[in-house]
Amino acid sequence: MEDEVDRLVAAWRRERPDLDVEPLEVLSRVSRLARHLDRARRIAFSEVGLEPWEFDVLTALRRAGAPYQLSPGALLTQTLVTSGTMTNRIDRLAKKDLVERLPDPSDRRGVLVRLTAAGRDKADRSLAGLLIQERAILAELSREQRGELAGLLRRLTGPFDNIPG
Image (cartoon, rainbow, N blue to C red):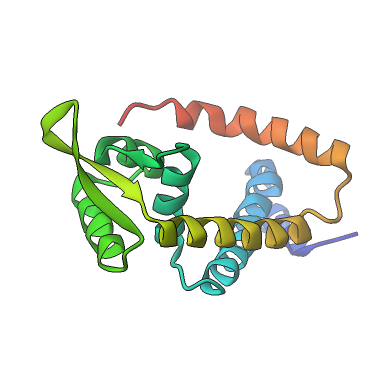
């Protein structure tokens, strides 16, 4: 079964036989899959009125477990954005009553960001919708193949997850 990446790779091999274009066979497919996943995420999140960045923040808080709160610094680490961006995101989510800021009892100068009941509901519903979309994307693979693919992708992404800053 030939796909668009096979045609792309064949064209480059014909036009640039001096280059080893083998990485395209894997990474062009990963890139294409990322676009499909992004589209699926947007569909799932729009069904509950969320943007992808909102999902990222709300679900980081939801994964923290009761009482569903984290420091802004912990949210930065989990969502890979700058402190200025995170402040803006927290402000916007607070205006929608999806999160609230509370004083940090262990640091008089600090705050904690806590998920509200409405935020928890949106996080839970959007995750359920996302999983439906993701299962559809993975439907062609057996459980064993999904496990194998997850392991291979973990090997590729692991070094990036451990880069400071």
